[in-house]
Image 1: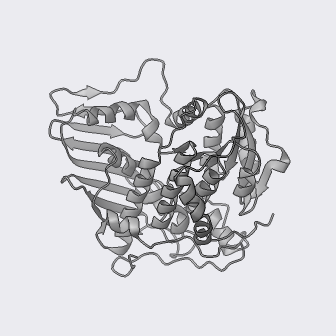
Image 2: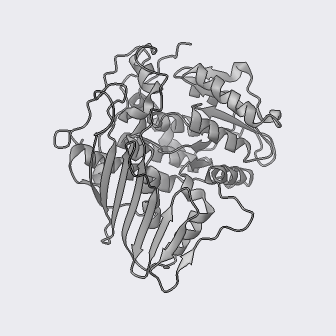
Image 3: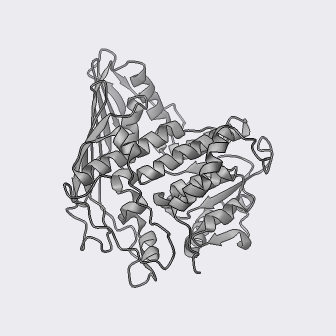
Length: 442
């Protein structure tokens, strides 16, 4: 399998800009491929890694009349592995899987072939550096979209996704995110309490995402990958242009909850520190150019401050918590558990799950998306997920540069990490690990 070269994101945005502007003002939408109020929904799966396979499984459980129709990935082995996993999951419902060999597409242009295969909905779960390009192509093709977080790794990508969201709204297409905690009953009830004044006026927000450091790709290295691009995509998490660094790719979940607490009003500015203490090997080697810890201070116009801390270092204290301090009480939450409480309040509260219910946000995001499509009122969550993505990117910009970065500076930044004229055999040197004070904020 030899992946084909692909045009750069810059070229892609240039050629698609006219259509984006036209679509945003509401040009007629092409006739849908199916009557999605009643017909079988055909799903295309783009980016067939582990999280993507989970999303595909949840999508196929999100509606009773749905099938996986096409799959696409740069690497054929990813498709094979994902399909085997899905076959095991749906061994009692084999009709959910209808992926003929001719609808398994490999290469850098695999996403285009999936979009052209007759699908109604696409699952976009490639490495995040490609997300803006794939979202744009999908909505221009008239497809409903589930996109895993984050939505971009740089400011140029965020601006692209904002324009794509306008196209999706004009075409009445679903555009749904994978910020999983927004979709859980426990968090929804907790943040509804916060927004209704249960803790009074918010003064300070704390969040943590302390986790271990695991080699995500023990199989892949420079000796068994043929080109710079293959090596970096195989080990995408460790390269900022592909992952955004771990504050953008992983800890963005916690940043999303900070934004949620503030009713999706973005902060005015951010100061952030970070570095690389424990990644093994030389910078630019197998573990790329990403940091292993960050600490961010966000400031809102109304005086609220938010403090976020994240770390990926083994054999250390781990936690994934949220604390929101208000004038009348304190909210405390712990991701992945049922602990959501309001304390130090005249009206303390603790979340209690309804008996016999489950609270799987990964499933709910798909259940609600397909229900909205069937009902003719597709969900579009872009107004918040673009802000969350940029908020995390703003923190990384501040850490890398050592500067205070405002929301306006982040939104208008000229930073564009995606390689120009990307091609399979291109020379793609690894950018050095950012040194605050020397790294230039653009």
